Amino acid sequence: MVDLPINRRNLLASMGALAAIPHAAHAEDYLDIEWTDLIPAGQTAIPPVFQELLQHDQAPLSSQQPSSNGVRTDWNGQIVRLPGFIVPIDYSGTGVTAFILVPFVGACVHVPPPPANQLVFVTTSVPYESTGMFEAVNVIGMFGTASMSTQLADIAYALSADQIEPYRS
Image (cartoon, rainbow, N blue to C red; front, side):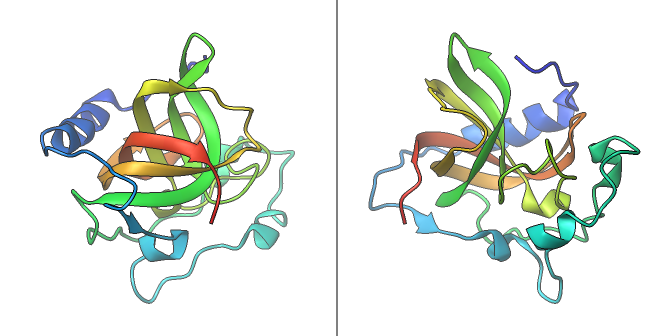
């Protein structure tokens, strides 16, 4: 387990709001969204190739996180499928029960995190047996905006996962 202080009040409020909306994800009942969909109009994401240009040997990676200028609320309360990579936060046995879903390998761990509007905090009641941080997954579940901070990064979105599966397009 990674011991990260999370702004629990914001996290609980965000996840509680998601849990209050009845849902059940079925394979045909979700919207596919991409990372670029999470960025407000007129803004650009920092491509992973440019992340490599930031200094890695000085300040903690979290202090190098670019600022985020807003979120999109288009999918609040919707069942979505979003691909990404797992940065584990909490475990139950050997399965991951909370993690940050990131758009590229190494984000938040080996390279500075992307802006908060490019990170999703995922919780699941069924632990996912992850093969590690380099595993690509699809996460299906209730999506919403959230404002939380961990030692790794600030996060702007939350997803209550009903299904986590190895990535396939």
